[in-house]
Length: 102
Image (cartoon, rainbow, N blue to C red; front, side, top):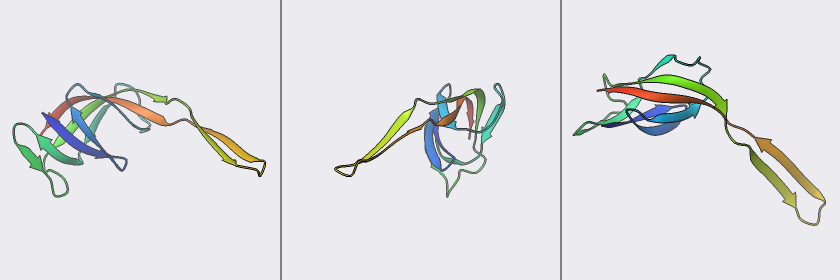
């Protein structure tokens, strides 16, 4: 059984027991989370919402929050003595999916 949920403008395919990194939600560890924007559910037969499946809820529990690995952005213009080096680290919330209710 799996579901496709929408969170933060992105779509995720999840199953029970999966650990997913979402964009930072600002929640404490061991907090219960409900995702009500369920786009599709498959439990033997596929249910696709228009745009969301009515009555479907995906439940999860926050494990922790953290920061991802650093990504280096380097821009250089040849022969112009111009270069820019910048770094970026994505903040995330790690969630364990506990139940899919359809």
